[in-house]
Length: 270
Image (cartoon, rainbow, N blue to C red; front, side, top):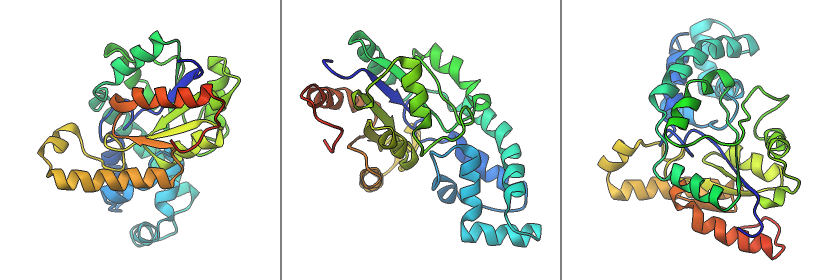
């Protein structure tokens, strides 16, 4: 690479946990513990936000707010959000350990980027408590980024640029326009845009499609195509400069972005 200095990756749905499966059951189970049923589809809508913010967003959904009031006799307020969060955390800690497999091609991509001198950063909507069991499992498979910035580390997380700013400081980056942020969610794309980076979405492995590798293999190709096109369109609408199916497809795109950056181009649609 002639110009790019770093790539900053999201975790679930981007580098690990194909289909971003780990948080879904935990959200559903946490709400169920308070007598409120939510669907997987509902649980996915705010994906990418820090998990407490995610729960607040779910509680603000009119249907869920009404269900909470019926079940609990009062509004879904901050105390409710924090109670759900405390129930959610241990469930998600357990779940990430069961969904720690790298997305196929992720380790090979990172090795190729390191050979070209790029630094590898990471941000996540997970807390450090949730990440604790995931980090060693990822490392065993060949993925150990140069830094990690978690929800709760700073005054605000996604969609603000603060976690990216910490990445810049950790990695010694002075020019955000020479950094690529890769993520499968709208808040993660917004994080990269707010920081002034190139922002690349991943559709097939991410929250938008939401299928594990096993489910993908068994699904109807036409349905996969429909889901993937919808996920791709959503990420582009969120402002992504480009979208790939998975990180296994990323290297040729990074080479194109590198050529544009070397020519002095600001981050733009590719």
